[in-house]
Figure 1 (cartoon, one colour):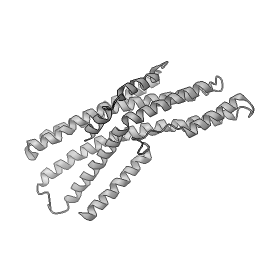
Figure 2 (cartoon, one colour):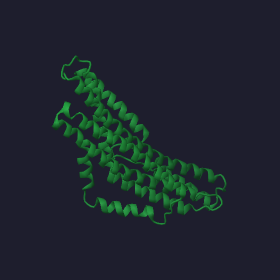
Figure 3 (tube, one colour):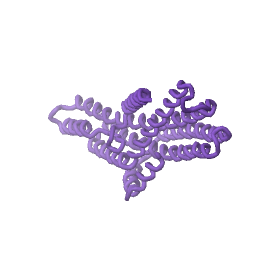
Figure 4 (cartoon, one colour):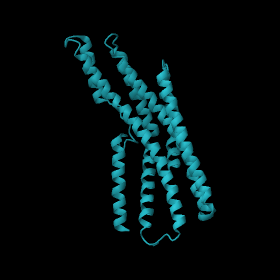
Length: 279
């Protein structure tokens, strides 16, 4: 399901031309620093190791349970493994795009230096970050909604199996097969949680750069007189950043922040309680 939603959202008209056009500004006049390059490589290596380990575990688990689950069920369980590979490639693209926007936002703060202040360049760089975020929201918004929905579905499925284990075999009689299915679903849930948490934390950290920019403007204002041009420009930049913050949204349905994960867990718990009451 998530692969279908992601494919449909990517197949929209002119979506990739807009993506290439908007990504291009991130690399114009852009120079990788050693720290930037090293941190990005470390993040990607961590994603490769974690996703590769879980992908191998789930693939081996699907074929190891071939005798108990049957050939068709094993095929159904192996299909999501290919989906996980697609999610990994998708996550790397999303993560790299977010990191570029975050480094661009940090660059706008570096322009606000007392020794060599360049307010107009800082505002121009911040505008480029806003442009990149609008591109991100239009392309990856529906895919992130699908990831949230997939996480919710996996969580409810595992909770249902756990409740079913206490029902004296009301529906499921084969306990060995049942627990193997639970283990596979828990592997999918952990894998999906890593994807979701990494995206949410990256988006939230990038959003916080707006607050840092405003704090930097207010800090520099104290060094200038109210009648000076620099003071007025800093005040205008702080006002603009306050009303145009870096916000990542999932198809304009909700904002991607750490609080979104807490809301997702709360919603999952509510649905689980309702499911138990009517079961």
